[in-house]
Length: 259
Image (spheres, rainbow, N blue to C red):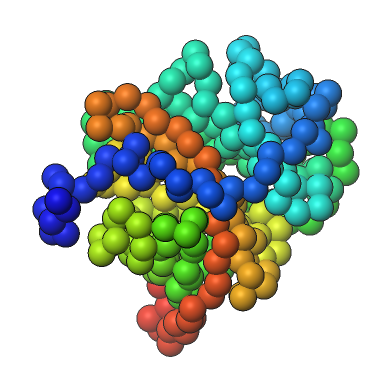
């Protein structure tokens, strides 16, 4: 039995997984045969993604991946490197605007949060680079959003500041649980954002890409990655439909977006 205030009774990550992916979008094979070289915006080394069927070659190894179409020419690729089981890689590839974002999620040995994330914006070789770079954003601050992952799983998110958000489970095995955790938001295209979070109670983190352009018909695609109850890496993808519930507008002098 879960006691709401006793975090030792909270479900491990694998306890959430059954049925949580019911609203996941179908994977696509649009990138088959493509070789994409990413030039790091901050001067880091180039990285190459080679796609063959449902596999991607990345950093000297080839692994199964899932690819989701987010918008016209905008793809989200998720994989769990077999050679580095304590890492998960999320690629956001904008073939229309020639831009990319690489998010690497890593399970550490200790610390709070135990699962951390690195963000590397890039441009795509051979593509015309247009629009604004993929960069940190405060656009979600003040929004309260309902996300439905299946008939049994529903959560609300309240985006508080550049560093914090609050979640509450409204339906599912975690019903009644809530917490405030670290988050990071990157703007990908106007109205489309990568939203990630890192939990402090359960050793896990998530990477999602969410389309907020229609407040009544939000859509997201993402992954949860961390440790199960036996301390083994657990990695699974999901999707959600959402809607904006409300928006808080702070007076300028108290605006958390400016903190």
